[in-house]
Length: 206
Length: 390
Image 1 (spheres, chains in turn orange, purple):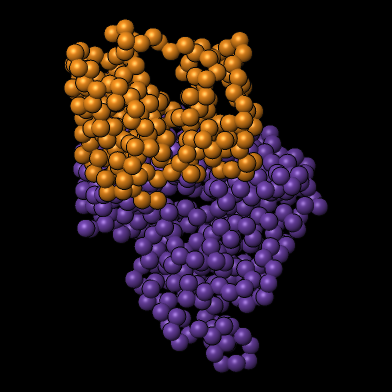
Image 2 (tube, chains in turn green, red; image 1 turned 90 degrees about the vertical axis):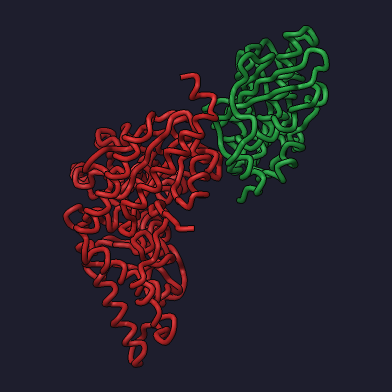
């Protein structure tokens, strides 16, 4: 497994590292337990809605730091509507690709940027905070990447059922029994859903 | 770029003398041992000499040594061979949660086939729970397996005490030892320690890759595991490279001819590395024991607030080879199972770095590595959201 030269460049000399003194919005995603966490802060022009400054901090591996660097480069100078539409595949492509097992880093960086923009919109009454239902769970599961191929588990049709009953998230997954990433996927699903206060319990069947 | 190699736990640089010793067997001395023909008889004598060298290094008899194609093969021949031959006496085996994967995957294999396996726990320094061992012995226990020197945190399991505990049973319990990290680093006397089966390999002591050895105490029966033609060995059937065996024997001569001085040097290098890291870099945590309970060649240490794959990659780009317990650098994306079993949290496991020395390392190399490491840790902490919060 080899990182592209661009990943190494952004890892060794990342752009936009640090904190903004009085940010207009911010978000932190991931957790040290999962091995990666990223914080993004924004300064947004109130008239044009253009992201004038963006900074990030990362606890994580090389690809986590590189995706933090590239995503902040991409978002800087964009208005928030355009920045919201950056996909994790575009971020990975911008780095000349990431190894499949590292794709989740790209997802985490994009997700954090979107959360920071959402934070700005909610604070400035441009949008409501998201209502939580089983579609929100499905959206969240699209951020769980199957490390073998670097695609999300929803796209790979590994998610057979999603439900939300009385605060209990019910997930039915299809993963081969001797898959070496089996425990990892289940743990990732749990970690992604645990952060929602709307979810009291998670039931996963395989 | 000059290479600074501190990953000697995985494999070591072959000694120049080893390569010299191998060459004749790759060129003219390729004939296999055989009776009554001149070339074959010479090879037979030379093989006997290599066995004698290896046997002497652990206080064994030459006929108790079998050359295998790797340490892992030696483990498989020992464990599977012993269990298949002795299953009639019982179906309970004991291992610990921090053992080398060879032992754990074999234990899981037998568990799946209906054997009972007890997995002993560990304390916070990587020593297995001997009280639990005492309480786990049963009338149907046939085998206890252990990793003499832990491959991650360097703890040396107290084999003598373990043998005493096993001997409290009313029947004989076999002791199988993976000595991959112990061999050449701490003295091993198989008779004194009551070892029945033991695996080790050449490439951990500056010998060639692709050759290991199995010690099988006289009287311990092993069923066949690898079926095939008996070329050099009745257990490791098929071909084993004579050149590799010759290289192995030379590596043993070099390691044991100067054993005390080699070990003293390893201990000095490790102590120096640890002292320099702890005095230069704040917020570190040594994993595994301090002092004599630790193998002389291993330092495993965690760096708070940052992640190990990033540290490892930056060190690598500076020419420094080390290992990490980070999930990000592992094939299954899991944190190191030994550190987790010892009670370390995810963060401490993700940020753990393992430096393993060889007699070829120098203090100057350590100075360079620690200076680079200090820069890297400082830079990664600057980027980390966790560091600022503290």
